[in-house]
Image 1 (cartoon, helix red, strand yellow):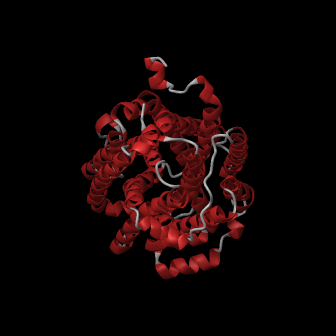
Image 2 (tube, helix red, strand yellow; image 1 turned 60 degrees about the vertical axis):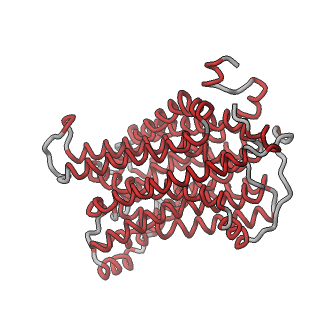
Image 3 (tube, rainbow, N blue to C red; image 1 turned 30 degrees about the vertical axis):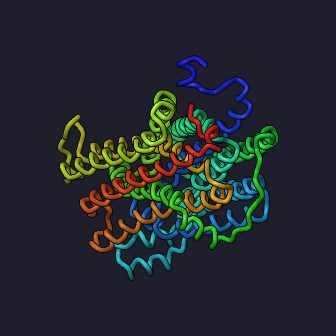
Length: 489
């Protein structure tokens, strides 16, 4: 291949039959992920009365329980049915739930809400704890938030990447994985445009109509993912060689992971990302609600962020991440995300300290009010961190799984990607919950000064984990029997 083509499009003509189905699977999975991310934040932040403070309660308590149950189901299914059928069994419930939420739960939320008992609880706990009561009062939105949160870990982390890791070696991964990630960026870009167009055209209508349309789109996309997976299995059978299934119990599987320094370091990277990003993101979403209290306006703004995120990620993936991976190797590529995240987080906190009066109408730099300045700074942080994750972090993390045995690729990956990621978000959520309830303000904005040192410490540990994993990853590549598989060209 020519120099520029090898940099931008390192796919040979005879590889397109394998590459394109996987590319579009990632595109559709990320499209749904982005739509769900926008909708779940909108219904929780603007539709429950509890504000952004409800998010740490859900992530810190409810989501981690369902993530563990999902990992348990995935592990049990892996022991009893083929990996091919596990994909269908795990994805189908998402399809039916999103239809059920869009056309039954959301339209009838007032009738389904336990208003009387929720009012009694609020009277007992006080308004400073209304974020706890909101989880119960609007249980249907809480359920949607939980399922939408798990989508990324299950469909993208376990099902898609698990399938890709089974049929790809590191040599090909260095060329293909960044392009798969690019498909995800295209999906995010389409999602942003779709949600923005939908909310703009239907601004005068009830928000429930927007929910109907978006949930129908999500369900159709689920069907397309299933169809692509069926096609890939049928046409890539020669490449899709699964080893004999293991019947290792869940407890033994988790103990195996705990005894594996290699998996432990991957888990530390995943936990580090979830912890550090969530500590800033919840604060930012609380600021966005102050700026855009109306659900349509809030979702319109967040869809714009998704569109910019998709565009930025696609440019990074095409122009930089693949070339950086092939030129500078795994280690430098893996270090990019924590460094950028740490710098962006520091900038956000510094601006927050410089402009503490959020309700001031006095213009600051760039002729913006303090609140709008912080909203934009938080948006830049969100876009930068997530685009780095999609272009650099996810690619390097998935490559680290390839040399592992089949047990670690399935159950080990399930524990690290699903539960490990949830521990990162859960840890950050409980930090915020304890600070909010400890101070008694009921607002995340009151505890922002205490969050900055936590973020910087977590990023430092994350960087150290990457350094440790690089040594082990390099050792595996230097084994003579694996030299051909791990040659990165």
